[in-house]
Amino acid sequence: MTTDDTAGGLPPIDDELAGRLSAARQVAALTGAGVSAASGIPTFRGPGGHWRGRDPMTLATPQGFAADPKLVWDWYAWRRELIDAASPNPAHQALAALEERLGPERFTLITQNVDGLHRRAGSSHILELHGAITRAKCAVECGRRWDWTLPLDEIPPRCECGNLARPAVVWFGEMLDMDVIHQAQQAAATADLLLVAGTSAVVEPAASLPLVTRHAGGLVIEVNPEETPLSALVDLRVAGPADELLPELIEMVGTAVG
Ligand code: BJW
Ligand code: ZN
Image (tube, rainbow, N blue to C red):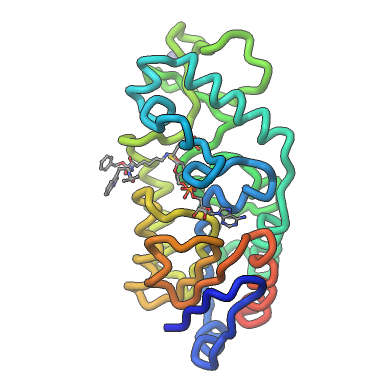
């Protein structure tokens, strides 16, 4: 195993790793909030993150929504404002360039982010595990789903059926879309290389996807300024911000696997 915590550039790549990279056919990436940090979107658990000074259970659970839908919608409307005003950063752009280089059949982007910045950067083969902030759905599941925009006429907004609307995202205790998680597990299991960037790797089932790749014999590379529970298990740890180091890593990977 190669690990190197040297900040400020890619760690050394030994011959064995270089050989395995050049043999890689299928590539996947798993991203989290840290990838959008340089676009000005707060993470959840870090300093300045959403969960600092806020209780995730009041904002990101069905129970929290039932208790105070206005509080939850105010939070989503505030986040939506930040996201609408933000632009993709070099990390999003590098992942889009990798898809363009390999083709969507050789590259799958799995994201926990709901901000849509990967799509805005040009990625197309994306699995949004936790949904999309731009979508709303009926809170009592009459089946309606639609795009919402700011400003909202009323907070909380309502579904056409008269019941409350809610953001079409996945909260704690809720099942992910079966089709999306199944495709993500397939992509992780068949990846010769999985790039994991900007996630604390604590929220399941996303956190287990790198282990799926490892068990199937694929390489896992992590890009994160901080250590995570995954760090000790990866083939290479790139310690630093994704917007600075992912483009460099992807240039190296693209050349090796291209
Ligand atoms: C940088 C950086 C820079 C900073 N560059 N990096 C098994 C065991 C235990 C519990 C469970 C389990 N299975 C399921 C659970 C329950 C639960 C769970 O995982 N809990 C754990 C927290 C303990 N999971 C669920 O409930 C999931 N549902 C499910 O599994 O259904 C079946 C089931 C239910 C119940 C029991 C058992 C089975 C659903 C999870 C939904 C998560 N929802 C949220 C909010 C909604 C979406 C939204 O509004 O945005 O999703 S929570 C929040 O966390 C959000 C994120 O997508 C998700 C992950 O966070 P992420 O992206 O990793 O961000 P951070 O902030 O944590 O980390 C940022 C990282 O970036 C840090 O590491 C920084 O260092 C780094 N960074 N700057 C690169 N410039
Ligand atoms: Zn409805």
